[in-house]
Length: 140
Image (tube, rainbow, N blue to C red; front, side, top):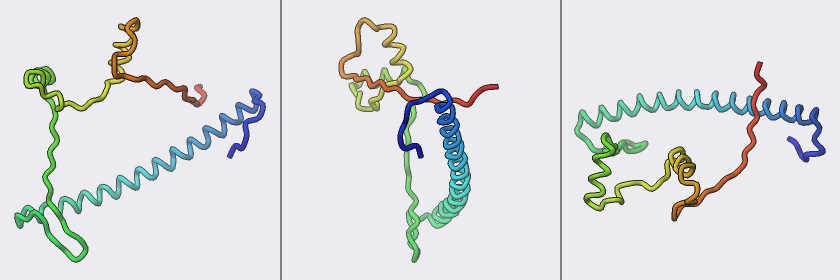
C-alpha cells in the first residue's frame, strides 16, 4: 500500500497509475469470479424454490413445516404504471400524491437547471457536488 504521497514527478505519477490499474484489474477479476459463483448458487436456489412452489401448489398449502425449516408460499405484489399521463391525472384528480415516491430524476433535473439557471434551485432541493478521480487505461 502507498503510505504517503511524496513530491509527485511525472515518472512517479506514471508508476502510481500503473499500481492503481493493477489493483483495480485484480479487484475486477475477483468481483467477476465472485459474481459467477453467486450466479451459480442463485441458479441452484431457483431450482429448489420451484420445487417448493410446486409442492405447495400440489397440496394447496400456505406453508409446510419440516425438521430443518418451514417453506412458506407468500404472495407479493408490485405495481407499475403503463400509462404515466393517465396515472398522473388520476393522482391529481384524487389528491393522492402519496401514491408517488419522492425522488428527482437526475438527468432531467440537470437539464431543468440549465434552462432555468437564473432562478436557482427550487425550494426544498439541495445539491451536493464533489470531485472524483478517474483513471483510464491508455488507448492504442
